Amino acid sequence: MRRSLPLLLAALVALVLAPPAQAAPGFAVAYETIPGQGGTPLKAFVVTPTGRGSGPFPLLVLPSSWGVNNIEYVGAAAKLAYESGYSVISYTSRGFHDSAGEIDVAGPDTVADVSRVIDWGIARAAGDPARIGVGGISYGAGQSLLAAAADHRIKAVAALSTWTDLARALYPNETVNAQGVELLLAAGRLTGRPGPVLREAEAAYRQDRFEDVLPISPPRSPASHVSSVKAAVMIGNAWNDSLFAPSQITDFFTALNGPKRLMLSPGDHATAELFGAAGLPNEIWASVGRWFDHHLKGLDNGIDRELPVRVKPNNGGGWRAFPSWAAATSRTDTVPLAADRIGAGWPTIAESGTVLVSGALQGFLQLPVGVSTPLIDRGAAAVWRGPVQWTATTVSGTPRAHLTVTPSAPKTTLFAYLYEVNPLGLGALVTHKPVTLTGTATRTVDLDLEPVVWDVSPGNRLVLVVDTVDARYRSSSTLGSTVSFGADSWLTVPRS
Image (tube, rainbow, N blue to C red; front, top):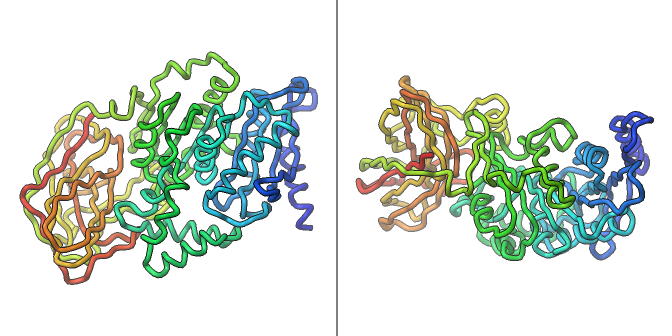
């Protein structure tokens, strides 16, 4: 019965997605076993064009996300095959579900699998060796970027909800994203077979030795290989991505030298492009199609003449375009911060929200993480109010908190939150960032919050809150210790 399930899925997909019998061109769907690196069997749905001759066709390879199988992109693959004549392979990543092997966390074998699937697609799916694209969501996106650095047959990449620096994503400023790590570990155990690297990383995490996990990051981080990426790269991510926050994305995008496109929009991890993977109308996947059409098929669709950075404000509004990420900021305002002293280790009502849930609510319903600033415990949090903005203004770029800090404990975690607050004191979370400090010496901390584009309404103000506990992260703050902030502190706010 288990062996017949993939065949049944393939038949159902073909039945649901197939164009009318008289339509030409069309597409065909097959469930295949593809030898990955070292011969490891990888299970795939192969979607090929029909009614367009025998090829060769531009080839797209789509590795699955973490915990997801090869059905993930079949809807998009059918659309790309039917409408644009691509041969598309959507396969289950090594170690998950119906593919063999063990999860190596985008290690050498998983990255090499992309090239082996390309080999098979050229030989068995009428793929054109001169027109190869790769892409995917999350784990598939990271694999695609790593594969593009290693295999220069790849001419175009579409990386959605990707990571570019694994350590920065899951251990920002030496602070563990505990909810994110727990989610990934649980998904790996439930849907796959963790290999030695993942098992050892989990053991270190459970023993509060996350720094021992860091050596696995550089080889698995596209940022370490950015100079080797020769393909045309499109990246789409969400402002509130709770696994792979946008700061690592904007830095990687800036470092790319070839043709590139960046799209940042409201939402959480994979939410902005979720429905497009199923073949439903979606702005991100429409751009993916245009990206591949231009760079693999040579279509003059104008995408190369558009400004490469496209953003939607995190609290609603249409797309805005810039020639670079730096150009999203045209000026900065500085808000002085008064001296303050707080008790550490106490939770407050200032929070960054829940992984996947809060960002999705922001993206789909424009419901931000909120707070009533008058109710924030001033004994456990520093609260600085900026001036009222009497005209509409936009936060556009990376806010920075310049803090002179004196902790009393050997280790302290700070959480900085930037809110838009109305006259009643009700705030909407604009952006945030943690940082963990070691030692009790007075030091200057330049804390870059996560990048954002956010429209501030007239009559509202920006409020910066810093406390020492957040449910999303693992805090190192000691209950009963203190943190002092010097008067020579300030907040830098980027404006468009």
